[in-house]
Length: 407
Picture 1 (cartoon, rainbow, N blue to C red):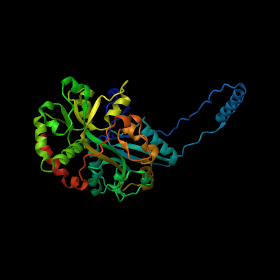
Picture 2: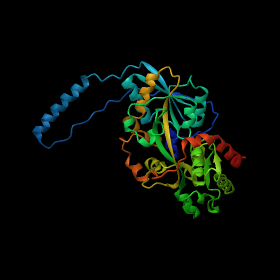
Picture 3: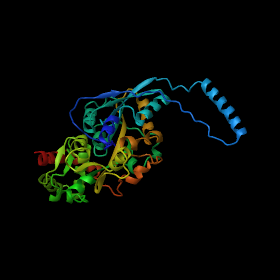
Picture 4: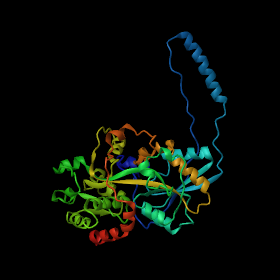
């Protein structure tokens, strides 16, 4: 996950972005800032009132029962949470919520159940997070890492940042995702699609039809309308580059990008700058942005009074992202770290992924909110590039792209 627009003020206040997608970004690579927070462990008690009845005798009995139940509730000691016996650190990318969301409540519930407290360490965007992990491989900053996606997975494995672990609960995970890590190199935790999104009203105002293909984006009709992210500093940016490589081939994507440059494409360091800085729906001046297929339900859920999505998705541009979590090699608390991995793919935690990270759960037992079913775009056939091909060519492709687009 990772993401889109709650109506801007609501999203910023809640600290939710899509991921990453939200993966998501690899924004502001090189930043040394890191934020740590610890979720609370208090669980609020719940109560239920008895339903009404029209029978007076039954009503009297129910009143007596209700009184007895209330008195019993007042004298019964609440179930105590497990005493905190150890603390581990979950390293995440910057769009992962650090407090006051159901995601954080679930981590607090994990603490209550196990006595293992979870501190969140925000290590910057996904690329910065991975780079730091490579530099500290064997002596990690934390114990578990969340958010390495399939475009960086082989690099992470080659750098030996993860301790292989076959998680408990993998039988509930879609086999398409576990097949990417057959030996427990990491654990799939969410998936989503990076796609070109468009502002419906803004395009209508310009009298321009929404694009339907990658080729459309180089048409003069869309000049100066598209904003993308730098693939060297953003995982959505890299995903979009890979989508163009999938379409045009390893020898044909370069002329396509030259045409995008000629057509006035704008480039930002990461998703946040693109979506909140330049996309028209968030107040910018470009009605086309590389974002996520989960944008429409996000906007319907958190926009005021919306019953229809204000943005659309160009489905043919979508590139599938799968995100992984893993036990960091060299952790001093491997058993606790493994327990957290198991929890991250459990149904209670996975049930919160869509509405808080705006990517999709990998646990097949989780039912999505109807809004996602109605408005999310999950292509039947997303674009993909084989991970080993990405691994062999990533740096060269990024260097070529940089010379071509940035200069």
